[in-house]
Image (cartoon, rainbow over all chains, first blue to last red; front, side, top):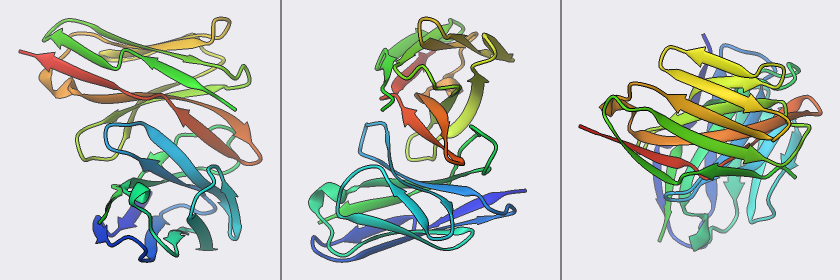
Length: 114
Length: 114
């Protein structure tokens, strides 16, 4: 069966520090991968999605970036964190090429910026 | 782009009563409508979904209806139980270049009272 892993589960970082969040998927090949952010008490906002290695689409202009160095690995980064980057970051995957397909979420990373 | 509106933002019901959550979408090309349940601090989990070639789908106590003409869809939970208490999100999606981007509603906090 397919599983999705995110780490770390929680992270506290000072303003201006760099960020790297990692997501990996097991049990499937060529998945679509997504990064979402959820502010406290709010809905989910799509940040990036990827349909293949090195292919990244950005949905919201910001100081975050994403990379997909391997088929089942998706990384969210920042060179300098802002206070507004605090939130719950969720990675998700879906089957590629199946038109619209279910997105399955990881357990998320809770990021607090001090 | 797609815009999804969700109502109500909070909903309190007595145990055993029914709960209804409604969403509207703007993009007539959207063809996939999932519903997610998110418990506090946890990841969203898919509870039911519907595609645009179907008007209604049911899974035990949960049902979803879709009106393509009016561009709205609803979640119905019957015989509510305390464990149904959570935040529920609707979403809409259309296929785009091998992937599918979900646009989420702002969520409904459902509280089932004893």
